[in-house]
Length: 557
Image (cartoon, rainbow, N blue to C red):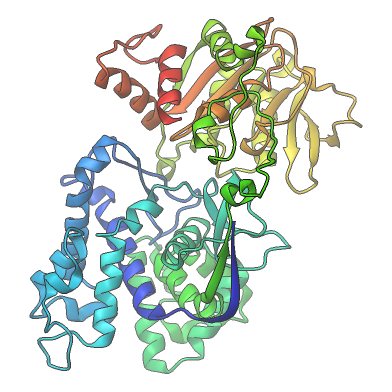
């Protein structure tokens, strides 16, 4: 636990930090797009593209880095290419990088972590002369070094939006910056990111994915129109240039100049919003002028506490309970794992593993589709696969439903089931309604009732256990039910076992099936190849078996 204390102060060099961060994200997004596929930014297995669900001209490409050996082998070359391209085509605020006398030393400084910045740049690097670095330029170099050489950019691009981080848009939200998520679509109510550059970077990425709301977009335009005419034209022109040819000429003609913009014209605002809500330059402007100046502050001191502090009492009287002893080596030194004399209880660790090995039916690899060309997003591919395989429940501990609410998922399933008519295997869908905070049953006509009031029993419906409810939830499923358990990047034993435990009769009639995105499935197969173990799959060309999955899960753990 970390608590801020003392008086707050403004974040130093905020303008330099945001300029560097946004420039790197623009560069990475540009290099990762289709036109650069002849020279890919990263090889297969090191990154995936997950663009916003409603992409618009100039939007973020959705680059997410995949942790593993492939990424580690190419991370330095990624940093080198980002630094080189940024210096070749810098944004206006960083234009001095292109022709500075110390350009080569700067590039090495921002990508090489083996030596200090002073050693690389030299003792006379800072100063008032043209060949030296002014204070604001020095701040830019240090910000770039933090993002690349210190791996802050890599750290943030490995996280999953609306699974690991995102904007808390609930009524009780206190800030408009990114916060940690406890599970998919479940923001932490009182937590924030302690490292300011991480908070800045994840906030920018979050708004790139979510886009601006209509009110936020209008507020950005109002701020723009309050500037001088020259600044208005320069900034607005940058917005439209980033959109490129993505706006049809007939629509562009209605707002192709800033002089035509009228925030009181509702029809024009909705038209502009359709094309510019996810535009990276528009999002940057909104954040730089409306969010960061008031939200990004730091405190002079902080209080920190951990489990070690809790156990550090005079008499060392700490008592706890755990059904397994998997993490006993991580306990504070004052705490000892008690040995259990009962041999039946000592088998707890391996019992669930054995049940899964014996009662898993197979594995499904979910192949991504190009949403910009009419393809289905991954969450729809997952739900269609579950129905095709005749599953009774979805155990989404891998958070593959991220990007859609539970209600949206239920509506999609009800639509698919209704298309089957009398042959539909379920009378409805049971899911946890995030807005009403209760389990809800939706019939195939779209009528929704709380579970305790619904005439349809959950055993007669398809049940969705979202990421946040793959632990602790207890619903009555058919004795012959089969659940589809999803795997996400880095899934660990505790989370997978808890999700499998939602099938209360697993091994006594109920069975399991695994599903994962293509990048996760590839890592499971690759692990076996690295260890010299042939994958034990039913279809050796495509499907890992339960033992392959569990080896990978235990490796993550």
